[in-house]
Length: 329
Ligand code: 13P
Ligand code: SF4
Image (cartoon, rainbow, N blue to C red):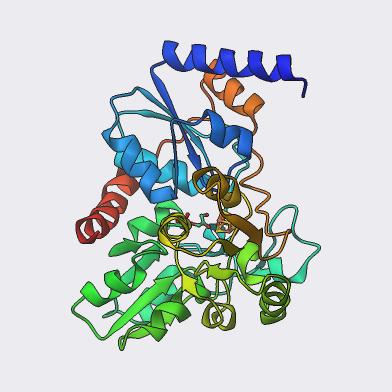
């Protein structure tokens, strides 16, 4: 895009933002140019919390579907817009509350790769029926339907605290098997997990870590808990995207290997101009997070689409699960 074209696009976005009394929120994995026009950048929970406290009428959520849903759950009186309606999270979509279809589910755009085909022979209700005493802890990367059937939510940053806060011996933790395994290492409670995963993080192997460490021997390695357990065990620090931002800033080290979606590197570099950041693997890119462009943000504000509104019968119990977590941290 030419410089003048880019500038006029931004001007139009800012003009419409004022006119509609909107704020633009962008997840840490968004495209650089989208992050640069956002009012707030952060992880999904930080963004939803921010949205709930800001006096605006419209929230343009540059992220994926479950994030816009969380914003709608916490701010029902505001209009929440997701600029790209197909921006979904394959991991969030791996678990359903109930299903009459005992079929193999494929994810559009990914069905050529076997790891993206997941058997949906079970549902969350099957798990709940099998372990009726175990409360459901759902990662924020879940649909509103799943949150509504959960006792409490968690994030990658507070999963252990959330599990420890519950006065039970066994919990159901969905949908990420890697996050569950990471939590299991840090709690004596029994965790029943779903077999879901994030394709961006789960594809990383220990070989990738060994290679990156040999290329950058002075760098500290930060990993997101959506990575496999052997990758996490080889990390210097395991944390959420916002945790990585805090860790890199506070550390006296000058070089870091970043074990998460490469979009975070834009902010890491901006906030730490004297430090160097290497992606663990250059292809750690979430296609859904990259769907949103400046043009789609402009379109969202112009046409007021796509509105994400969680129905009250789902929103109220989903909010209870989110609120229980928010009380903890
Ligand atoms: P956090 O930004 O909460 O660490 O989440 C990572 C992620 O995968 C969001 O989709
Ligand atoms: Fe979902 Fe992974 Fe993409 Fe996050 S990075 S939106 S968890 S697929």
